[in-house]
Amino acid sequence: MEVGAQLRNSRLIKLTLLVITFWASFPLLWILRDVARMVFSPIVFYDNGVFFIWLKNTSIFVFSAMGISVISCITAGFVMAVLDVPFRRLLLFLTLLTMLIPITAMAMPLYVMIDGIGLNNTLLGLILASSYFPFGAFLSYLYYSSVLPPDLVGMGRIDGLGDLGIYRHLGIPLSKSLISVVSFFSFVGLWNSYQLPRVLLAEPSKSIMSIGIEVFYGQGTTLIALLMVIPSVLLYLASQRTIARGIFSGAVKE
Image (cartoon, rainbow, N blue to C red; front, side, top):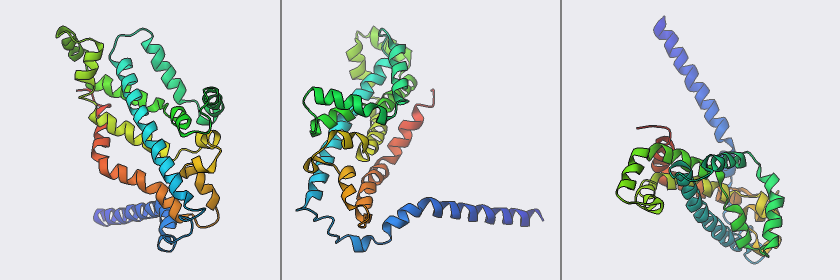
């Protein structure tokens, strides 16, 4: 009787998981259903190939803003977790507070700032406005708090290292996994960015993918949707081990 009950439970669990998997993957199945037909879609050749301009602008925007985000986040996290600087707790509190503010509430202040320095409707202005990534800074803080104990920092001080030396010889060598995690989350957020580009970019020739595809709503957006999904998936598959190690290392004290 117990064996039969276990078999029934096992089948029920498998069936439940199968239904959940199908339901969760339905959007992807919808995207893939007619991709073969959409490969030769006139979307790619719309308006003398403006699609390729959007792709170039998106690449410049994403990788430039991601580079600034990664450097600033890792540095900020190191400072808050390791260095004995004034107002360190206040910086951490402001970082957490900023994470709670939705981007829609920050869009107008950022627009005023970017317009004030004459960079409105430019990729450079969008890059500067999108480089702020408080989640990455907080994640860096948690990571360094775990992997860089005070004893190790004290030994560096004894060897004559200053703040910059500790960052260079201890912080950076230990940040490989952290760089992968922050880069991944930054890339996904920037690649799918919509609110700030919509506010800061007015000319179609300076637009990016997430804004440009609005032109094709209702005209078969399967190919565009697939192109928006593929880069994030490929990046995760290429670095999933490093990402997982970076995420869990911040949760374990050695």
